[in-house]
Length: 341
Image (cartoon, rainbow, N blue to C red; front, side):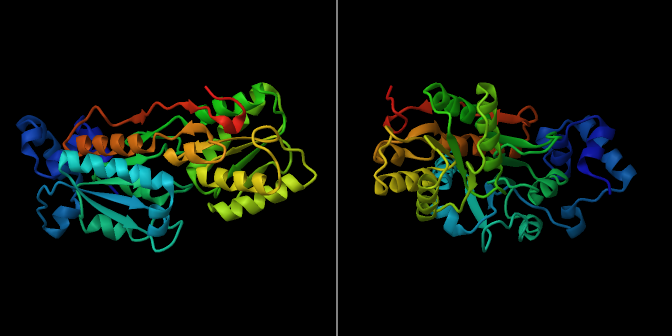
């Protein structure tokens, strides 16, 4: 099957230029370039989905957010709420409409998305919460619709894939090294479901910190649990009450950290004197835990803002922004790990 990438290669132009020709955006392409692209299209016999259906889709100022979980998770988790807040604020500023598509249940990355794309509900797609073997990337990488991932894809070839994220592995490595440098040799890693790319990348940073410090990863100190404060509390209670020695925790989610603090409090374990806790910090509630929580600031609202800004540029025909974009972040040190800056 002939793809947009193949047409662009044969014509010696960018993928976005081919998209502009297919979508009749004549103000963005010179007549000479358009003629060359049209000639290639005719030679290879390519017909876009819009051409097949005889549709002329006007510019709508609308983008579609694709979320691979239930709406309950989108609204119920601080990280996603903060990201969507950044997206919403930016859509208002840029005068763009938003359509949000969620699955009926969690972990359905491809459910309905082919139909959504075919319906042409928007001019571009914001792909949230990447998963292992995420079928959405294949679908959009072979199409003509601009898309931006809110997360760094775990694929060997990122060409044609635009994404916005933090350097998650590097920041987790930095946070865990801080715990190790403070004398902690028995550090546990708590994450949510393994199918989430963020859990995978966070653990990569955790491993690097241990390897750099020549601290072995103790058996049973890597745990993946449901993203629920109560379940996290039960898991940490079992961990702390077992035979394994644990002096510090790093949690991939603030929800898990809150459960860990509850478990320690109910067990009479003092934080940070007996147990240090660091986490990914998803919103400002991390400053109001008891004790206030330390960790890596997700910059979630900024991620949402940058992702939509990039998508709008791509929708507008920008050719030099198709790449990964790392949003700078920082370690926030509070009382939960024993020091405060």
